[in-house]
Image (tube, rainbow, N blue to C red):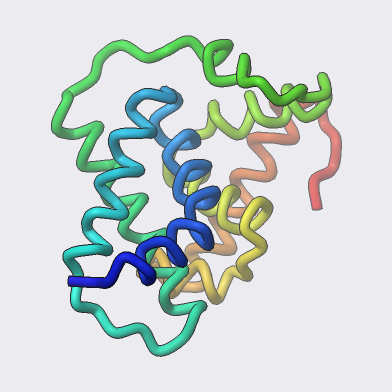
Length: 160
């Protein structure tokens, strides 16, 4: 089991990433908090030794994605929370950012993951490949298809 100091450090370092990933997957702030606690509890109980900070961050991303999938599978949810509830967070979101966020959240999960990791977390396709355990060419294909879906959804604007 890890020390309180270690826990405080990783929470400070990865809380935002874990919370954003949960929101992207679950689209529900209360479910996000439950999975958030689960992820950090798994870290607390884990004896995994990390080779680097990048390895540790990749572990948190992978565990968070898996925990979100487990949560959804466990609850067998058939209803969803309206997207407006997610977007009604205290921070002000510009109309352009709101539209892009809505489009990203509307993507199927396999596209949403790679778009989030690439554009929001700044990972390369090679790094995403390692995190998700998929071939690099598959990641490139998913990014290309996601960009096309977003371009079509957002009215033909080019995405980076």
